[in-house]
Image (tube, rainbow, N blue to C red):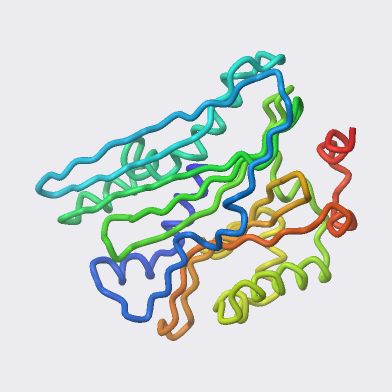
Length: 277
């Protein structure tokens, strides 16, 4: 969502402004996160179609270079007739960076970029349909983007779970009941994939707790939820910087939970009942 990227960018505040145009030998980027879900694509027999929409723009001018290569799904023929509403949610998720920093920039963004020379704005977005049936659609988007400079490189994981009957979007804070056990399992999953993960090792439990309530913590950390046929995944996007500025790590990662494993953390939200039908 656009406000998420806006919050993410401007609450980085000093980090972004101080780092702009500089080269960092201590930056660790995980622009592809981990690839464990890259093979996941679940398609049940359904009455509607899913096609790929693509937005491309590339140009080089004196003060501004742009490079956008964005793909996202669009549905056709929903029995509910909610095609337009569902497609808008999917489009906005994929185009978040392009909208915010190029197509529909907020006033603060325009002011910041107008004061800079040799801007480089880029966004490469891919998607996976991880679960689909007649009632629900779960899609994951990966956005590898640059905010004005080759050195301001970030990578977000966005997820959308949509009720195809009502065009409602379900958020992580609506779907789970947090607990110390869930946070421990989640952190262990992050460290299993990357034992040297700075955010995995150094963030306090309360940061993970706040992410599970839907908060974008310090403008740098947020979580989301998506489905596949085997269970639930928690996605984690981060832009970590240590207090001394010597350790910087940006990217995303995902941790899977089997259905039975995740059952104790399910809220009483109607989505779980829809899934179990």
